[in-house]
Amino acid sequence: MKQFLSKISFLGLILIAIACSERDDTPRVEPTDVTIQTTYSNDFDNIPASSVAVSIRNTTSQQVFEGVTGADGTLVLEAVPSGLYDITGTITMSSEAFFSFAGYLPEGDEVVFNANMTAVQINTNASSFVIELISGRLGSLVIKQVYVAGSDRVDGAQFRDQFIEIFNNSTEVQYMDGLYIMGIAGRTSNTPADFTLSNGQWDWSKSVGMSATGDPNNDYVYAKWLFQFPGTGQQYPVQAGESVVLASTALNHKAPFTGNNGTTISVNNPDLTVDLSGADFEVYLGNDVPQPLASDLDNPNVPNMLNILWMGTDLILDNNGREAIVLIQSDVDIRTFPRYPTPNTTTIGNNTVLRHQVPKSLVIDGVEGQPSPTNQVPKMLPNDIDAGFFYVPGGAWSSEAGIRLTANSFGDRKVLKDSNNSENDFGAKKANPRGFLD
Ligand SMILES: [Ca+2]
Ligand SMILES: [Ca+2]
Ligand SMILES: [Ca+2]
Image (cartoon, rainbow, N blue to C red; front, side):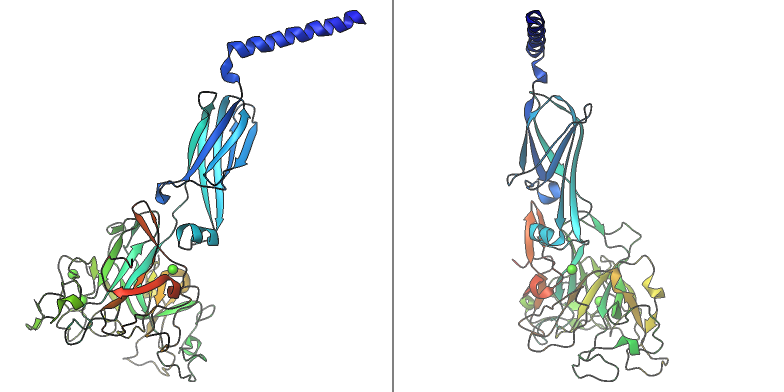
């Protein structure tokens, strides 16, 4: 028995000796504490990412070490044996969490960021790693500035200087090519009638020939005016954080110019209006209406919109602010969509205007305006496109525009607020193409 015990002791000593000699000869296999730092990608200025689930897996033993990053974006994993590892990080944000992080609502219910590094050597000399979280495109084009009020009728440019600005509020380049911009056909009287809803808005289910699937009022929007951006697919890029200006007429409205009838068109006070000569797009109806507007000149340097449906003789917006505007992306040509007359129409004649019916699922962004909080017309847009409205305190002819609030800056990229409620997302200021509210 004693001999047996001593044999075990002897064996033990040998094992210890082997272990010691291995440790002495190859110190790199010694377990090490590994620090993983997680950051968001450059789209979000590489800021540290907390609450990220991080996992490292040994590619040979398949042993996994995991944890969650702290407020500083780091996680320390203790006593990790050396070897080759795959490192992953992931964080899922609810749309609310993403809104508080970035300042705008994402398209889906949640946002997932992932980081991934494969076959990374971990040992005492390599124990600290930075992994970068990326996602697909986050965000969309949004309507940034809506200048419908125009400027003083005597000293300014009236409605000639109106414009709409669209901003790339996403993390990737986007293209204007083929998108549509549309004003909503909305009734502006609050008095109900047979052909309206109880709030006075059109009841499109009463339109002659209505055959839409779903709810004609809540599942679709109808065109008051409709234009398509030109381009073959990638002719008109908009970088993340940049914008494009769609002018009623792309001229410097501060300076006199000669109208298409030979008259000089000028303003008394250039400060009241804007220079739109650098606009990206303009509406030109000189070839489409019998009596063109004198001020509707075609600036050869500024691409013209494709005209589908218009009100009057230019892109003329409601100076009182009763204008709801949507940006639309459709793979199918909207010109082929079903069209209906306003619901007060009983028979369709030669002069009846038929209004394109657009599924609201095709709307990228939409904004609704009102004259003022105490002087509202019936709501035009479904609440999931815009639950509220913006207005300009100075009202019609005030030179003021509705401008989307700046929510955040990630490096050079500004991010605009978008909660799909322009009451919270917009402020008002003197119109300023490409300018920000603050
Ligand atoms: Ca024009
Ligand atoms: Ca032009
Ligand atoms: Ca929106």
